[in-house]
Image (cartoon, rainbow, N blue to C red; front, top):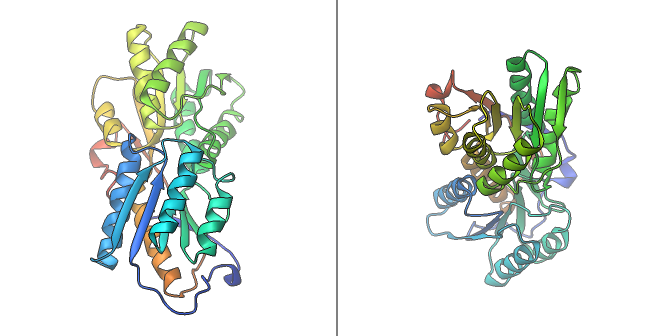
Length: 308
């Protein structure tokens, strides 16, 4: 697994506990279990937890992008006596009081996929790099000129970073015009379809679309097909199984920056277990490096459960 470790002071890294704790019970709350990405994340976390302790209890819940629901889920984890919580935060800042409450109860909290304010540690993709490599691919395919759309999403740190990484590339190509960058497609296929329909109705010429995740890209491709708009380069972030299929078939989807939800979750559980056992981490933040999957190399891509 390729990763970047961000330096931090050791004094901030150790989990203060009177004695080492066995990993006995893990709770994970994610944005939506309707998204295969988060299903893979949950499966990776469960596999690692059971490898560490086959008797460990494991509970996964879907916040459905509802902050209040995620607060309640964390409260339930605290009440049930888990000693490790993994949080894919709906709002990484607003969730801070719930994180503080869990830590006060002696529970280790590790953020996954997005930065989580107040967590003991965080594991995520280098999302700036993910956005950068995808939009660099788009810029190269366009020869440095054309009309592009940045199809935005729910404003988590991961989405903001991807968009910023993308914009940094387009900013270096004056002949690339960003037609729209503020439409929230909500991370879903339905959202991607709806936003793309609107954009293609508004704009007569669209050469490329950067979608912040694969479900949106698939929705965007369906909208383009329905409206009979061709010659559009669609690219995204995730490297999902559905995008593998899309890259091997007759779609306008051309690339995706692959993440490893399985690897993120396994790393998060490992770090949480180390903290429970009083071990100081090398860093509280680990960034896993994305890789670009295209039509040219998709046959070599190992997928989400690979240790990237």
